[in-house]
Image (cartoon, rainbow, N blue to C red):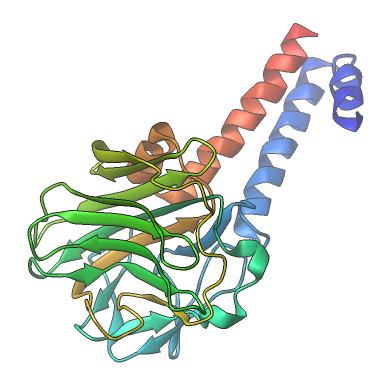
Length: 276
């Protein structure tokens, strides 16, 4: 209601004042992005690997889930967007899974997106979480048999979907994106922005709702499938991203994706002003 009043009132102002107001709105969105506020209510984790602080990697979603470095994870200047993290095999980021806010645990949908540059074709976990009942609830992986994997499971171990497709390539940047929406009953695996496989949900139950056995970046909870190579722009969501969103994030990086989204809101406000 207040926003509508703003639009109506702004229409009575001289053009130069309207422009100043719009600039102010844009600055507000930009400042909000740059602050420590939560970037998006559905964004659970975001590692751009631009900021290392001692033995931790700073997590940028605004939720505060910094990753504790175990082994050798170092910052590299060879990222897809600025910096990246270089993982030595057997090293990982510990996210203290049992202390993740239950409201942040994806159950009704999930998306995992990252740029990866693996050293060899082998079984490598991009991210992993395991429930308190020992359910392996998610597997976004580059696989040693030459493809990529995207999987979610429900509590008790029921597989919701298990997609294995695409061609695993070493020593080059590859964009990985797995999405799932329980409402749509569909999971999709995108490699370099292309749908390489999709599967309808085998069961209607939600994704297992806790990470009480742990959550890691770059290594399974049972110390298997170590990631070796570079990783950039890892983001984990609690909803299924659209194909358009996947491609925008791939092309722009998440920071610019949000900036463009804010610009779109500004354009919408300007459109309302003109129509009034």
